[in-house]
Each structure stands twice: as structure tokens, then as C-alpha cells.
Length: 501
Image 1 (cartoon, rainbow, N blue to C red):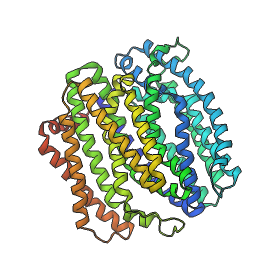
Image 2: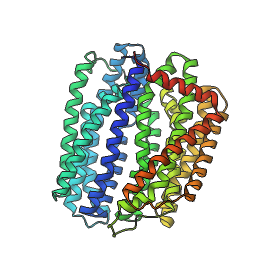
Image 3: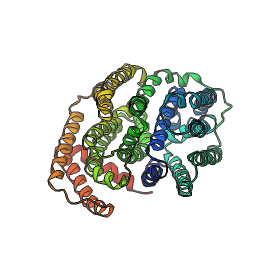
Image 4: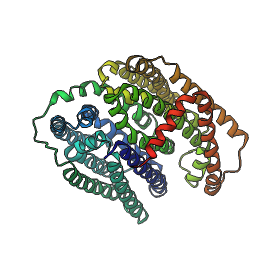
């Protein structure tokens, strides 16, 4: 299949899947709040985030395997690819055994450490059923997910994820509406994960008949995994530390507040993830094929990605409090409306999303060892600042710690990628960031001047459509004036993707 066709499929299926995820992701927490209360909602969010830490046993195998597969797949060297896949397969079997042991330990220890009115046995079972679903990935189809990603077929995974998510979330909605216990809801989710594993395994064996997991493994291809570990640990801390700290330093109701803001801002991450997954393999292949074509592609991608991300963050920041007021109407066990939170969440998600192009190039090039010290530094900054400030300002303190560490890493990645990997100055990247930050602040100021009564879902939606269109026109229009050549190249790239044949 041509690269262009893969990009098209990745975009279409990826965006559709993320749209479904956003819709169902908004519906479910509201039902959980109404049926079980803020404490259970906070517990589920806390368990999910702690499982993200346990997944560190993967120790960078996924990223290292994917990076090792880009070159042989681009050259159709299946013998070399099989050596990588075989090594990945064996590593995942070992990881799965360790993961299951940690799941059992977590399910016993965690309920003893938190203050909650949820019954002890219920907490144990919720943790266990969540963990079993995750363990399936390590034992059975982790290697296939990596192969699909490296081969540019994220649309297959996205389609499967969409179907599985619909089955999982709809099942949860039906069970919650029927008044079932929260443990039963988690069992249904686990069963869907098992079904997803069976389908993906069948697909991979049919469409990748050349794969031989019994081939002689090339463990040297995964040597980067020990360097990836620092990056993986850093990502997990910056993504999940706030929830863990709030769990132990505040209470589960505060975690529930944090989780709802993360859910709504997370919609941005889902949309951007679809774009990343659609184009990452193309960028990786060009990196190995042609430096000239790669530089043109990367520059256009970087500018458009940062601009698109900032525009989305601007839109969500404007509508989040009116939406939250409607979403949590009738929930009185904790206050969900805090005008100080949207600007802080906006910065957290802006730095996380905006630095992705630079971070992706680190992964594609395999420069994990050279940049791991900066990842460790970001982790230390996040831990120290967050632990200190969360005791004074709760959610705001945790967010400030994340902002401080993420700002440091973003600047570092811009410097390293531009000078060491691309061989150019940092002026274009900083110009792109500066223009978008100015537009973000300016759009927020203009938005406050026109504040209609957004006191219903209908009014929010009717105003959101024209506001969003105007925002995208503003951001991309200004960027076209500031960087016309880059935007011209981006338009050419978009046209090439749309062409069929």
C-alpha cells in the first residue's frame, strides 16, 4: 500500500475513532458521578494513572522496537524485521510475568494506603480486573501493535480501538444505568480487552504471514531500550504524577475534579494523537530515505502541528467552565468550577503537545542515550516542585510543577533537535512558538469581550461552531503571513495526501 494511502486511512480512521472516544469519554464519567459519586470516580482515575506507572516494566521496549523496525520495513527487509520482532516477542513475555506480579501486589497494598469509603474488597477487585486487561497486551499482542505502528497501519489499530471502546463504554453505560456494582462494570471492560486481543492476533497472522516470532532474535536491536527507559519514566511522571500526588496529599474528590479537567483538555490530545499516528511513519521513512525531502516535510509538520494544537487549546479553554457548569449540575459533594485552573491546564497541555514534533524526531533518529539526561532532569524538577506546591495550592500547585518541568524540557528539545539533528538555527521554531503563544493570549482576551449566555449545551454548541472556525482562521491566517514559504509547503503536503491513485 502506498504511503499516501496509509496516511489517508490513518487520518480518517484515527480522527473518527478519537471522536467516538471523546463522545463516550464525556458521557461515562457523568454517569459514574451520578451513580457512584465523586469518590468512586476519583478512585477509578487514580487506579488508571497508577497502572500507567506499573507499565514502566515495559522499559522502553515498544519505542526501541518501533525505531528498530522503521529502516527494515522501509527497505522491505523482512529477515531483519523478523529478528527484531522475535526479540520483542520474548521481551514482552518476560515483561508480562513481572506485570502480573505487580498487579497482585498493587491490588493488596493500595487499598491499605488510601482513605476511602469504598469497601476494601471492591477496591481490590477493581484493581485486579483493570490489570488483567492490561496484561493481555504484554503477553499476546504487544508485538503486533508495534509492527502496525512501524508499518504505517495505525488505522487498523485505531479501527479496532474504536470498536473495542464502543463495546466497552456502551457496556459500561448499560450496566451503570441498570444499577450494577462498579466491580461488575470493570469485569465487562476486561472481557472486551480479551476479545480485542483475539481479533488482532488473527488479523496479524493473516496480513503479516511473513512474521516468524520463532526466528533468531536480535536483542542488540533493542539495546536502545535501556536508554529509552529514562524517557519512558519521565513521560509517565509528567503525565500521571499530579493524580498520584493529589491522591495521597489531598483526597479522591479532589482527584475527581482534576480528572474531569484532564478529560476535557484530553480531547485535544486525542485529536492530535490521530494526526501524529497518521504521519509518524511517513516522517520516519523520509528520515531514512532523503534528507532534503525530510527537512521540508518536518518543518511544515512542526509549524502546522504547533499551530493546530494551540488553536484547539484556545477553544477548549474558552468553553471549559461553561461546559463544566452544565456537566456537573446537581453534583454537590465537591466544587468543580475554578477559574484559576483553565489557564494552568492550557499551559500543561500546550507544552506536552507542542513539543511532540521535536520529541518524535528523537525517537525516529534513535537519539535516546544523548537526550536521557534532560529527561531525568525534567523528572526531578517535576517531582520536587510538585511535591512542595501541592501542599499549598492543591491542584494548582501540582500543575505548576508540571509546567515548570515541561518548559525546561521543551526548550531543551528545541535546541537539541534543531542543532544536532536538523543542522539549523532555532529561530523558526521559536518564532512559531512565539506567534502561537501571542495568539493564545490575544484570543483569550478577545473572547472575554464577547461572553454570551452559555447556560445550556445547545447554546454552548451553537456558539462553539463559529467561534472555532474563527479561531482556526485567525491562527493559520497569521501563521501564513509570518511564515509563508513553510505554510506553502504544508499546503502542498496536504494536497499530496488528498490525491488518490
